[in-house]
Length: 415
Ligand SMILES: *Cc1c(COP(=O)(O)O)cnc(C)c1O
Image (cartoon, rainbow, N blue to C red; front, side, top):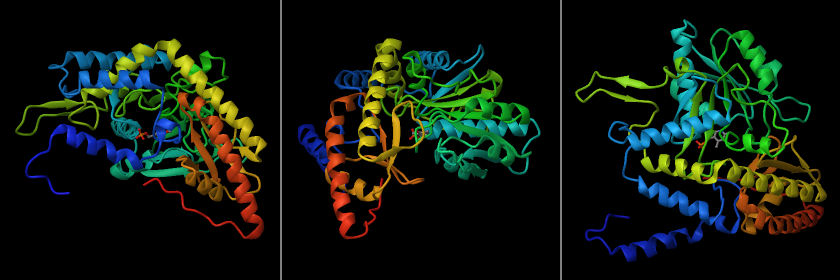
């Protein structure tokens, strides 16, 4: 496309714009279980209205926009309250989980350096199931990533002993997930904490997908193990608002046990022609809407609202578990939140994935081991029966095909 010389009427552009979405995954009809968190029309309307109210304001300027500074402070204090942040704990909003993780690693590295550690080279030690954002950030900062195989007992949890053995003098961070993305399993954070404490290593908990889910699941009676600042060795956490916080996209939180640790995060610079600037995270300009929408959704839902929504997600997950087991699938580990992965005992999982894709389902897959993957939203409760119906039909088709010829592998693509 070339920019039109003369612009078009908005009505015309709008029609065009909305038509562009016709070929997209049908998330409003519950056909995705990745990328989108659908908490219903009311929450969507609040996201939009709250976002547009501060869409032009800029979080880069807290003095100009004390409204945003206060809303961010409120969001962080709500987060810390939910995640057992001790007195003095603090944090910042970022654009997303990758941003939060990048800033946590940068902070841990600078903290290590200030303490005479990892001056020449640095590494981080993480379970194989940890999010690739750790690798992305480490590539940027020239940090070595030591990925450690998971336990082989079928729990799909981090292998704490092997992780401990992989740590050295230059290790600036150990990571546990709560839960991890590929299997939806919470790592043994208490055990990781014991190692981190003994070795005096920074422990980061990646609760991007569980930070605003697990506390409410626990209130609903789900046996959620200690995973947050309740574990004394946890120095930082990442928790995404734009996932199970049901905020508009572009909202995450990076949290620190103390102001002393946090101080290694902001970039404070005066040696250029412009005015001195201090920014907490990677971003310069920070969209005010991402802050106001998160603040509004949190205040609208409150603890009761989140408990209700996360309860619906857990109920849907339980329904899926029961149904897929009946179809010959095996659930990986013991997921207790909204993520679930399951492999088939007999049939090629990618052939089943292909059948589901042809039926319009755009879900994710896990590669180690090959399995189907769902990240469930509250509104999936309305659509899960048709998912299960289609899954049963897909298994039947694949079973029939595999009797005549070996399964053809389909490639799972996200981009
Ligand atoms: C989504 C996710 C991330 C990355 O978050 P983005 O917002 O996509 O950058 C990191 N860790 C886990 C466990 C996640 O689920």
